[in-house]
Amino acid sequence: MAKTWYPVIDYMICKNCGTCVNFCSHGVYDKTNAPSPAVVYPDGCVDHCHGCGNHCPLGAIVYIGDDTGWSPPHGIKSDEIDCALCCRKSSS
Image 1 (cartoon, rainbow, N blue to C red):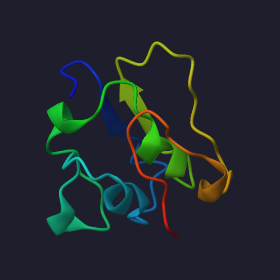
Image 2 (image 1 turned 60 degrees about the vertical axis):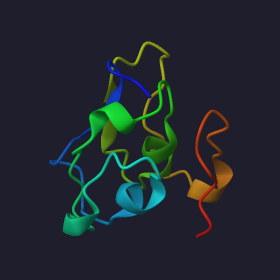
Image 3 (image 1 turned 90 degrees about the horizontal axis):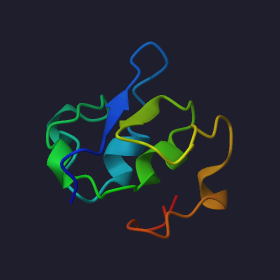
């Protein structure tokens, strides 16, 4: 898990759909506030994983420590994206 890599939610864009909260299996998000995303365990995020960001339908997630050139995929269907580094593919 990463100490200098974690997601940040742009609440001006986020519409509280819960996709990121439901996708992440590493405890990064507070599931008690679902669907509203709140990063409560940033150390749980896997270094260079873009799983929740790839699945966000509005592109409201960016990452502290990102040096990859990745940018949020606005409007790409989540089943077209697979996070091979760390995450399961969404079943929805």
